[in-house]
Every structure is written in structure tokens, then in C-alpha cells.
Image 1 (cartoon, rainbow, N blue to C red):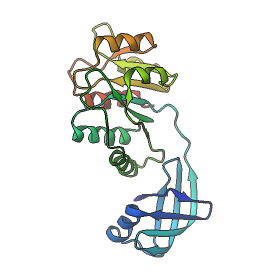
Image 2 (image 1 turned 90 degrees about the horizontal axis):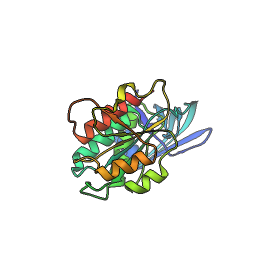
Image 3 (image 1 turned 180 degrees about the vertical axis):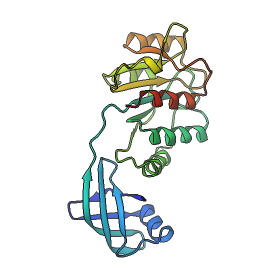
Image 4 (image 1 turned 45 degrees about the vertical axis):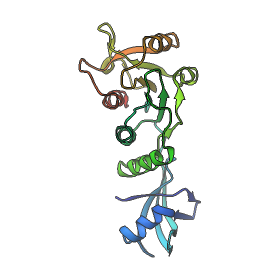
Length: 228
């Protein structure tokens, strides 16, 4: 099933605009009478029939609506900013496909960048969400300083990945599915001071296994274990 994004709909009609409409018309050859499936990224799934097509604009009538309940047990991911743009984009794409609830880039002591191309990453989230049939898109934050995030992190099960032999393995840390947030360091990991600070804020240290993982790989390993 092909899934389209709409940010404009009511109980009877929907509108698709811009690049999303161009792709539907020019690439997928959608026209008046075509039946399409849509989502607003906020849990709504629509089936509709196109009634009007213009150059960058599609309007249609809604045939069926289904509201998907939000799974609050989906994990939050806060990760040290990666210096390599390609790897950062790959991380955002795969984290979306797996089902992260939120994605927060962290500015840490060892981070080598402090900014992201938000518009570009939002497009990646949109594409990955449609491909993986996600009706609730993850929330992407602007980069946040590590200390500031510790003060605003969700009051849920708090975890930070940092290898120590005595740490519990992430595969065994949740006895039952529950909402959680996991901190993953950048290249070079978190500093000792950052780890200590996180512990004081109630974050439990966990291991991701015995292998040394790239930062983006560590994020996906953690998300996979924490998904309900």
C-alpha cells in the first residue's frame, strides 16, 4: 500500500500539496478518480478518492477514516550529534522505521558539531514513516545541550549506554514493556563527567553487548531492545 502525507483534512475532504502532490501526479500517475491512502502523522489513516488535480495540488473526498492509538511505550532516543551527515541521516531514517517516539540530538563534550539541517531530516522522517507504515511520526528536536536535556528528559525509565562489566545488559533491563528514554554517546562516547551527571539524574547505566559499536549502530541496537 502506498501512503501519502496530508497536513490538511477534515471529516469530508483532504488536500495534498507541494512535492507530495507532484510525486503522486508525475511519478505515480495519480489522477481524478484514483483511490489513495493518507496519514497526517498524528495517528490518522485516511482512504480517499481524488476529485481535483492541479500542478502541485490534489483535493479529494474521504471514504474511510481510522484513528490509530498512540503507543506510549515507544522509546525516546537522545543521541550525541554525529559529525558525518550521511550517517546522521541514516540514523534518523532507521530510528523512524524502528519506531522511536522522539529523536533528540545532543550537544556533548565530544560532539564535533552543534547544528542539524532540520528541514532535510524532517523530509527523511516523512519518507521513512510512509515506507514503514507509521501513522505517528517521531518528534525531532533541535540540538539540545546534554545538561539541559537531563533537566527536561521524560520522567520515564531512564537509561544511558556506557560499558562497564558490572552494568546490566539492555536486553534484560525491562522486565515488562514500559516507556523509556535511552542516551547514546557520540563518537568518543560521553565524558566521565557526563556519565556521572546522568547517574545523578536517575539514569541507569546499561551495556549494549561486548562489541564496540559505531554510535549510530548503538542507537539502533538500543531501540530494538526497548521497543514494546
